[in-house]
Image (cartoon, rainbow, N blue to C red; front, side, top):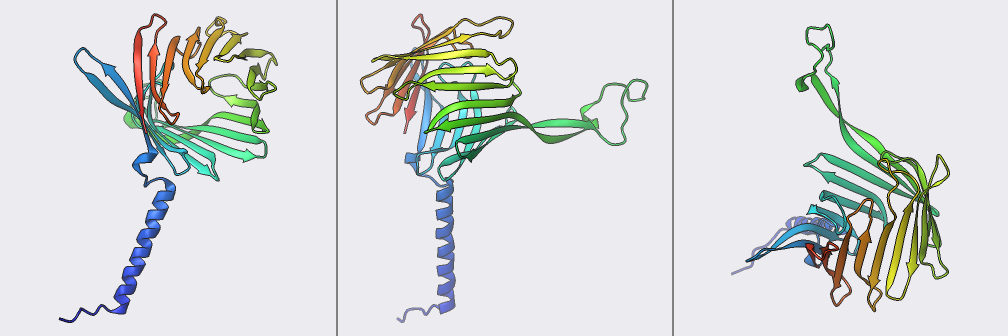
Length: 307
């Protein structure tokens, strides 16, 4: 039996389709949409009951070929020592290895926040914006005292639209790869400020000082002391928060022989929990397990990491 003869133009079309398919695969791979199992890091919360061990997925990190995170999927993770849970998704964009955009969205709460990073010599300019919903009365409808419709505006009488609002303007200045200063000219959560960073002769961070751009006086100062087996961190406040000056924060980071943090003690924290955090590592030096305790040794949470 003779083999079927395939016209040359058909073979040409098949080759073109194969080229397009390969091109699509390459594009997907480069953008991080197509990824291998080894590039996914998962975090689980381990819950112990009297008769079982429950394992709940609370975070997934998807990385590109360079090992940089391009997508974070958050399923109610509460980072060790933090007071609030994180939900939603964070997407990161890079240009020549540098972060240029961070896009956070949480459909449940309706949060959408984007942060842009611009690099100009020793400066990094940071702009944070939030997409919010505003409303206005529909054209032709009149509301208010003395009108037939009254003062209360029902939802169906409103037009809703989205607006991007600036939430932060910040400039970070670096020298020889180390951050020297942050200039926060606008932040909707706090007053404008500068943060100065000082280092010791070995290049280790020694002092952080936040200074009000209005009063030119310090809001707080954080100091670092280094020992062979630990790092002691203390932050002293000079202004009132919620009608009082907070007590000084104290942290101790305990180190193993590989200079890795294996235990953290935090006391009098203004924005975090007072707690003890223990860390375990695998043979590659990657974090494998974290445990959160009270100072009464009560175990609160256990996180496991899979790579």
